[in-house]
Length: 92
Image (cartoon, rainbow, N blue to C red; front, top):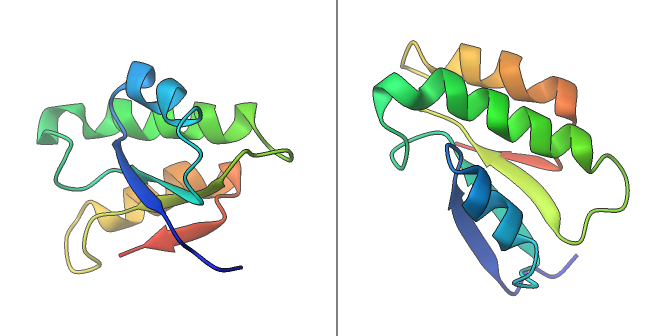
């Protein structure tokens, strides 16, 4: 797949995630890292997982998830939360 356009979307905004599907980007990257305040990270994981599960097959764009750096305590919870939704890729 040739990636021409990538759009980062804050993982804690259901509104922005829903609207991102209308843009036509090749890849939507749902961000759990620096666009999400520390206090909202658990909620963001739930929102991203819900969106992944709502679009299991016919996705308008590839769905990637940007997790927190591997050397932080947030990385493993990020992965545990979103992998059941089968993202198309993980961005570190």
